[in-house]
Image (cartoon, rainbow, N blue to C red; front, side, top):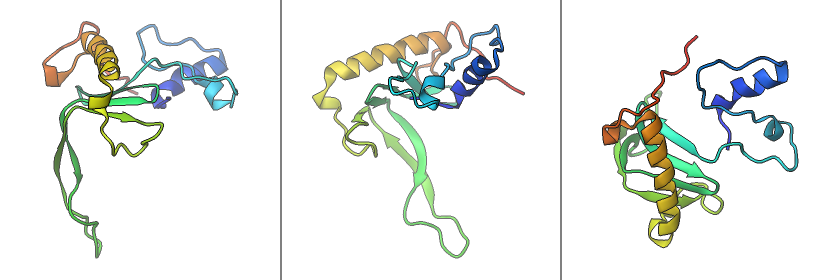
Length: 148
């Protein structure tokens, strides 16, 4: 697991620059980028937020979606230069094994309650740290996104 949040700490390390004093969420991923055969993600978990709402958490091969709505294509694709139709869809609590189901088609939440419990605990720690609007939690260490 890696994301664009990891670019700053990685480039800073390569340049010998110091990171900002304020807390950032990114990690140095140079071992992953350089192809180190023993490289592993520096992230214990990755959290998927849309605005201030925690929608999913991933740890290792597991990704747990929390109930939320999202915009998605409905009907067919566009044609004649016009976009296809979009609408709101909802997902309930859903667990996916991304190693065997990268397309997130088979919800295995019922088969792995221990994994769900572990991921919910990780999510609750993050909610306590930076919040979750769906649960109306502000978070103790909420910080604004970086701006240029």
